[in-house]
Image (cartoon, rainbow, N blue to C red):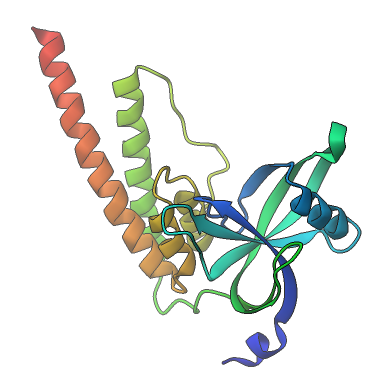
Length: 215
């Protein structure tokens, strides 16, 4: 354990979300309506506006042990004390133990970070970006829509890896594995595999579509 991780331990209110995995730097809009979480958010708004998001698996009934801290950047109170808010992912964390379960969970957590890279990650980052552009282009062709990547797509490898991971849909378990990885290269390599598989699948569908359209 590094010296930074020894001191980077704190209590954090925890918010389990069904099949939602938050990543650093990524936004997460929320609508808070359950009574215990209204209590939690009102308490948080009076302190440092931070809480932990953990992925809840409704099929297994389990809560992930690794999550991402969210910071409330904007909130709006609605009737019946409901709250709409925009949060932003900050540091990742690992739950060491639960210190309270009611009215909401509070855990003792330690912050986790990626290991320093041992090689230049920009070639791998470039490969992932190109695969991403292929997937977007093929998706647009199949749906006959003009789909474009955002102009502010992250250019730093770690931030790009978080962006890609957060934009994978319907694969919360895979996203959770990507969140738990502490090596940027490993995360980007796995994302390259996922994007390659997706690109090949979409390319095959595009060929079929073109073939039938020619008839």
